Image (cartoon, rainbow over all chains, first blue to last red; front, side, top):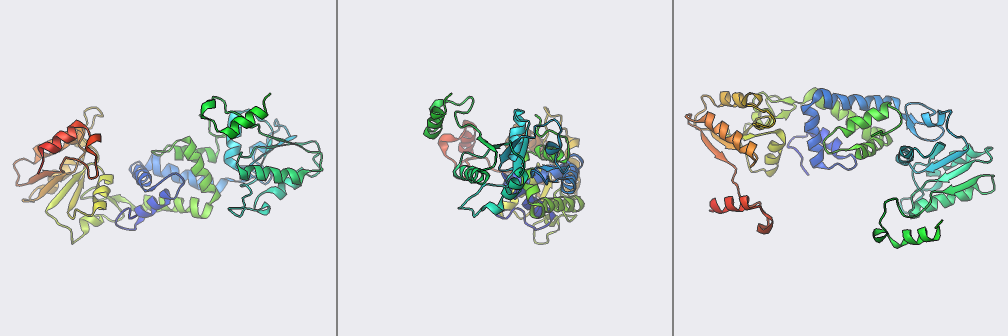
Length: 199
Length: 199
């Protein structure tokens, strides 16, 4: 789709914006005009934030979280429990769990999920670093916080298999009815699982 | 809403993204992670496009269009008609008309619409530059391409009033049924206008 007649800086800006997830040509055009009409508060502020982010944000060598510090603030926090490691697929999952405020342990970010379809194999994920991290740490609880999808469950199963034998407790997020969820709208699989895991 | 625990560069980036039109905290987080996980193709490309846009894109002194050239490519184009000036509220309207390929004249961007509610008065818009631009240009057709809203029609009326007396032809975009529009779903006002302007 031809967005503007020329292929100048405006077109480049719109194309860069339109390639972001969730944005199309129409929203990219709207954002480009917004940025250019508010140069100080819009364009320069975003430009500055991107520059700082590129310079300062890196992956934590321990857990894989993105932070300006390495080790990240979660790994470095003295008040957090060291005997719980929560395995998540990505940083957005870590953020989601942190927002609940219900977890005060460590994390380990896999960087994705095993997937036969997408060709993601164990060495594409941060599984080896996890095994090394757990070596010699007896009595640690590993909490699998992976999606309840085929890929998520296959990944959890694979990791659990690799951890067998060590003195490591493995747990999973409970499956069941979402809080506020209406039974009538839930799929059969969720209801059946909730029934089986009833407490 | 607290997006991440710290107020570091990640939080700043997410806040800058979340302030863009059409984006909220959730999509801003998603975009921030996308950018940081693809530094070369994502973050640096956007950063570069913003930098170039800030340096090169400016308002055309004649029509108010945003372009890397001043006068803009439309004002400078030798093959475009000089006896038609299309009045639009903003650059996005100019783009919308250009995408049709149906217009080969000049533009004049007002930079908004008169609005009693929002306190936009004639001197807040590029109306005086329009009058100066038209001075001495007899026989020019001015095409009002303003929204069919109260503000749009008030602005068109005001400009038409100011242009009275000169040898200037004033026309408006036709009102009627949108192409592909279903009569059943159209409002009464549009149908009544379409009936009155039937041809």
